[in-house]
Image 1 (cartoon, one colour):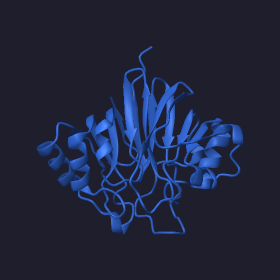
Image 2 (image 1 turned 90 degrees about the horizontal axis):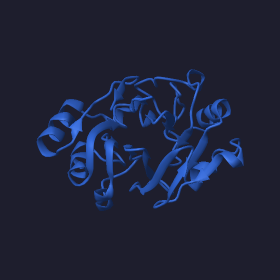
Image 3 (image 1 turned 180 degrees about the vertical axis):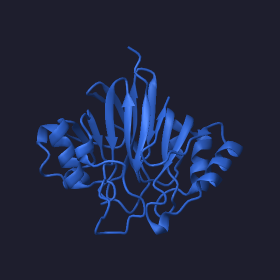
Image 4 (image 1 turned 90 degrees about the vertical axis):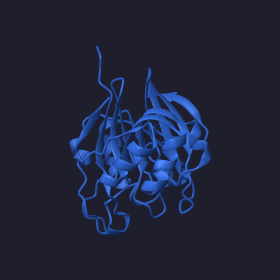
Length: 229
């Protein structure tokens, strides 16, 4: 059976990624009215909407990436494996120990049928930020997490790259384009923009710059929209 690989944008840095029939969720933060910061765009789902998950990946411990309520509810419902750096796992005391895996930059392992490479992320505001390259068969996705661009991104090879473009402690449009120049990715989907007033980004400008300066195909997803690849 040919199962289409897909990424579905759930808002901010949260995606549903489908690879080889496996379902992976990144940075579930599905609170429409968070205490910490006014959220300008609502998430596409809540844990109640999700029926199946194999992996839950958390990039770092900040509130808009690691929501203990959403991660725990999702894990309880689906029995998914949670992969996160130590400071983020420390925020998830109610996830069973056997369902937690610590992510260290440079790790490569296979779990739940998914090949996972943990990448470095450059986000000095976090204690231990990471990104992930996920692959099943010959399909792959790079989820950058919160990061500035950095030279080792030249090792990243993936069908789809999920990159922040909002600026403010992450790449902005220009840095993301610069990163794409030395990465080998067929398609880029932007994330981490327009959720807050201080991470506004012009997606039309992003698309134009990516097309003009890189070999990567830009694909801007609306919240809730899916890209099959």
